[in-house]
Image (tube, rainbow, N blue to C red; front, side, top):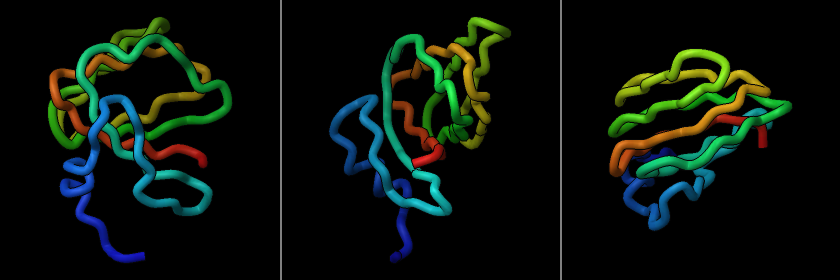
Length: 100
Protein backbone atom coordinates (compact mmCIF):
# COMPACT_ATOMS: atom_id res chain seq x y z
CA UNK A 1 0.00 0.00 0.00
CA UNK A 2 1.19 3.50 -0.78
CA UNK A 3 0.95 6.28 1.75
CA UNK A 4 -2.29 8.27 1.76
CA UNK A 5 -2.93 11.91 2.40
CA UNK A 6 -6.14 11.77 4.43
CA UNK A 7 -7.06 15.41 3.74
CA UNK A 8 -6.81 14.72 0.00
CA UNK A 9 -9.03 11.67 0.41
CA UNK A 10 -11.76 13.87 1.91
CA UNK A 11 -11.75 16.05 -1.24
CA UNK A 12 -12.69 12.97 -3.29
CA UNK A 13 -15.93 12.42 -1.38
CA UNK A 14 -18.99 13.58 -3.32
CA UNK A 15 -21.84 12.40 -1.07
CA UNK A 16 -22.54 13.12 2.57
CA UNK A 17 -22.95 10.26 5.06
CA UNK A 18 -21.48 7.81 2.50
CA UNK A 19 -18.39 6.16 4.04
CA UNK A 20 -15.43 5.37 1.79
CA UNK A 21 -12.95 2.66 2.81
CA UNK A 22 -9.43 4.06 2.42
CA UNK A 23 -7.53 1.17 4.04
CA UNK A 24 -7.87 -2.12 5.90
CA UNK A 25 -5.71 -3.49 8.68
CA UNK A 26 -6.06 -6.57 10.92
CA UNK A 27 -9.69 -7.11 9.98
CA UNK A 28 -10.57 -3.45 10.53
CA UNK A 29 -11.85 -1.05 7.88
CA UNK A 30 -10.69 2.55 7.99
CA UNK A 31 -13.45 4.68 6.53
CA UNK A 32 -13.75 8.40 5.96
CA UNK A 33 -16.91 10.39 5.46
CA UNK A 34 -18.32 13.85 5.59
CA UNK A 35 -21.65 14.92 6.90
CA UNK A 36 -23.97 17.80 7.62
CA UNK A 37 -27.03 17.57 9.83
CA UNK A 38 -28.47 14.52 11.51
CA UNK A 39 -27.92 10.94 10.36
CA UNK A 40 -30.60 9.25 12.50
CA UNK A 41 -30.72 6.92 15.50
CA UNK A 42 -29.00 3.54 15.23
CA UNK A 43 -26.71 1.16 17.10
CA UNK A 44 -24.07 -1.44 16.34
CA UNK A 45 -25.01 -4.57 18.27
CA UNK A 46 -21.75 -6.50 17.97
CA UNK A 47 -18.92 -4.03 17.42
CA UNK A 48 -17.25 -0.99 18.90
CA UNK A 49 -16.29 1.85 16.57
CA UNK A 50 -13.53 4.47 16.79
CA UNK A 51 -14.58 7.92 15.55
CA UNK A 52 -11.97 10.63 14.84
CA UNK A 53 -12.95 14.16 13.72
CA UNK A 54 -10.64 15.94 11.26
CA UNK A 55 -12.72 19.04 10.46
CA UNK A 56 -15.82 20.61 11.97
CA UNK A 57 -17.80 19.29 14.92
CA UNK A 58 -19.66 16.03 15.41
CA UNK A 59 -22.15 15.56 18.23
CA UNK A 60 -23.05 12.01 19.18
CA UNK A 61 -26.48 12.09 20.80
CA UNK A 62 -26.77 9.19 23.23
CA UNK A 63 -30.01 7.86 24.70
CA UNK A 64 -28.25 6.31 27.69
CA UNK A 65 -26.03 9.24 28.79
CA UNK A 66 -24.89 12.78 28.05
CA UNK A 67 -24.14 13.70 24.45
CA UNK A 68 -20.52 13.55 23.26
CA UNK A 69 -19.27 16.59 21.31
CA UNK A 70 -16.17 16.00 19.18
CA UNK A 71 -14.15 18.85 17.69
CA UNK A 72 -11.35 18.53 15.12
CA UNK A 73 -8.53 16.45 16.57
CA UNK A 74 -10.75 14.58 19.05
CA UNK A 75 -11.86 10.94 19.07
CA UNK A 76 -14.34 8.69 20.82
CA UNK A 77 -14.87 4.94 21.03
CA UNK A 78 -18.56 4.15 20.54
CA UNK A 79 -19.38 1.12 22.68
CA UNK A 80 -21.30 -1.70 21.06
CA UNK A 81 -25.05 -1.76 21.56
CA UNK A 82 -25.37 1.96 22.39
CA UNK A 83 -28.17 3.87 20.65
CA UNK A 84 -26.70 7.01 19.10
CA UNK A 85 -27.52 9.70 16.57
CA UNK A 86 -24.64 11.56 14.89
CA UNK A 87 -25.24 15.25 14.21
CA UNK A 88 -22.62 17.10 12.15
CA UNK A 89 -22.00 20.80 11.74
CA UNK A 90 -21.82 21.77 8.04
CA UNK A 91 -19.02 20.00 6.13
CA UNK A 92 -17.70 17.95 9.06
CA UNK A 93 -15.04 15.41 8.09
CA UNK A 94 -14.38 12.31 10.20
CA UNK A 95 -12.94 8.82 10.18
CA UNK A 96 -14.34 5.59 11.56
CA UNK A 97 -12.35 2.47 12.35
CA UNK A 98 -14.48 -0.64 12.69
CA UNK A 99 -14.49 -4.36 11.91
CA UNK A 100 -14.75 -5.09 8.19
